[in-house]
Amino acid sequence: MPELPEVETIKRGLSKFCLGQKIRRVKINCAKSFIGPSEIVEGQEIVGIRRFGKALVIDLSGGVSLMIHLRMTGQMIYDGKERYAAGHPSENFVDKLPNRQTRVIFELLDGTLYFNDQRKFGFVKVLPTDEVEEDKFIKSLAKEPWKMEGEEFYKKLQRHKNAPIKAVILDQKIICGLGNIYADEALYDCQIHPKTLAGDLSEKQAEELLRSARKVMEASINSGGSTMKTYVKADGTKGDYLEKFAQVFRREGQPCRRCGAEIEKIRVAGRGTHICPQCQKLECRKAEDEND
DNA sequence: CTAGGATCCTGTCAGC
DNA sequence: TGCTGACAGGATCCTA
Image (cartoon, rainbow, N blue to C red; front, top):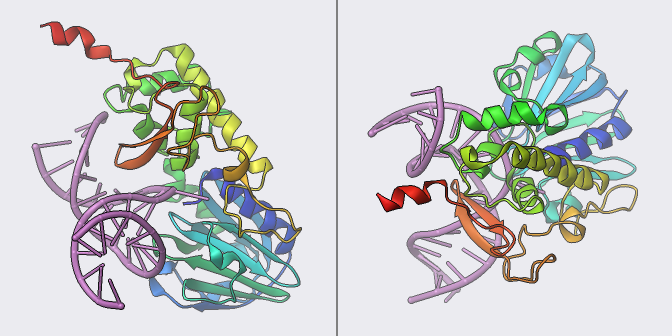
C-alpha cells in the first residue's frame, strides 16, 4: 500500500478538509471493503484523525471510529470545492468519481469522501473508539523508527538472524511504517544489500539503517508522499517523492546517483527489489563454511 | 519459535 | 488481435 508517508499525507489532508464535518450517508459498493455496521456511522461527526503505522483511524462522535487500511492499492479522495487525494497513485486521482474502483462512499455535509481500492485488499472497519488500540492488527504493530533505539532494533535483528534484512524491515511487528519503496530506499541510503542476513549486521549498521529509514520517510512526508505525475493536491502542489528523491525505486537500468553504476532490479523476500550493485555489496557470514 | 511460499483481487504489460 | 503469465508501494495463513 501506501506506506507510512502516504498515510500521513492522507491524515493531514483529511484533517484539513474533513475534520468537523458530519457524515450524512455511507454507500457501500463492495461488501468485502466494509466491515461492521454502516448505519451507526451515519449522522456522526468527524472529530479526530489518527495514524498507527500504515493504518488510518477516523474518530467520530458517538464513540465510534473507522479503522482504514489501504493495503496495496487503496486511496482516500476528498472531493468538495477542492480535491485532495492520496494513497496508491493512479490516474484515478483526477478521474470522475465515483469510478470502477470506488468501494465506499462517505457523503459529507460539504463534499464527498471516497475509498477507492483496485485490488480490494484494503478495508474500512467500524469499531468503538475505545477499542481501537485493542484491535488485533494495531496492537501487533511495533514502534516506528523515530521511537526505536538502535540497541533495541539490533536486538530484534538477532531474533531473525537468518532472514534477509529487507524481509525483516518489511515486517510491521518488528519495525513499523516501511513498505517496499522505503525499505529499498533506506537500504540504499545506508549501503546495505537487502539480502544481507539480519544477524550479519553490526550494531552500528543497525543504527545507520534506523537513521536512513527516518530520513527517507521524512523526505517523503515533506513532499506529500510518493505518487505519480497525475497526482495533484488541492493546493496545486504535487506529491513527488518518487520523481525528486527516490534513488533506486523503479530506477532499474538508470545510473546510480552516487557511483554511476547501473541500478538493478532483483527479487528479495518475494518482492521486487532495487539496488545499486556497486554501493550495496553482499557480505557473506557463511564464507568460512564453504571451506569445510 | 522462525522462514518462506501461497493467497486474497483487479489491472496492465511484455511476449508470443 | 487475443491469449498467457508475470507482476504489483500489504499482510495473513499455512507449512516445514
